[in-house]
Each structure stands twice: as structure tokens, then as C-alpha cells.
Amino acid sequence: MAVVITDTCISCDACLDECPTEAIVDNDENPTGEDIYYVYADKCVECIDHHDTPACAEACPTEGCIVWSENPTTEGAVAGEPCIED
Image 1: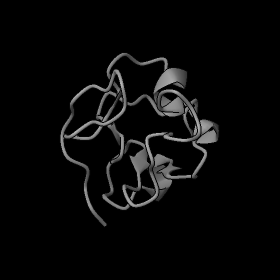
Image 2: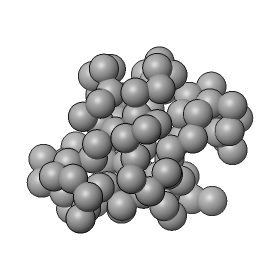
Image 3: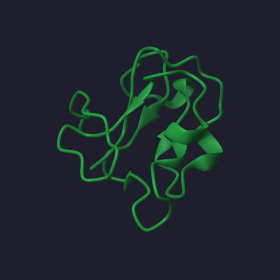
């Protein structure tokens, strides 16, 4: 389970401080080299046991920028593309 940040990311920093597991890194630290923020799938828990929905998605001002995993378990999840595994 992990959220994915899509290429519609505007690098606004809204999600960075919201992640309770510090799974999100900015575009300077993105291991794929893409110029968008990145979510480490092994750290992301979709905010289960922290918030009702992923806090990063709630904070994001860009519609559809943050999507849930391919097999979402969180109520209200949006199916997205699979996460890139490290």
C-alpha cells in the first residue's frame, strides 16, 4: 500500500510536512531523477492508523496529483498506477 505522486505535481511542498512516516521526498531527492516529488512505497502506509485518508492527498492543491495504490484498501481510494519499488 502506498500513494503515488503523478507528473501533475507542481512541487508546492504542501504534502511534505503532512506525511506521518516521512515517506515523501522532494524532487531533488527523487531516486528516479524525475522532477516531481516521490513516495517511498516501503515507508508509505496510506495514513492508516494516522488519518482517515492520506494526509498528503488532502493537503495537495492539485487535482489528481496523488493517487492510491493499484489495490486500494483505504475507503475513498482512487486506483492509480503501481508504485515504483526501490
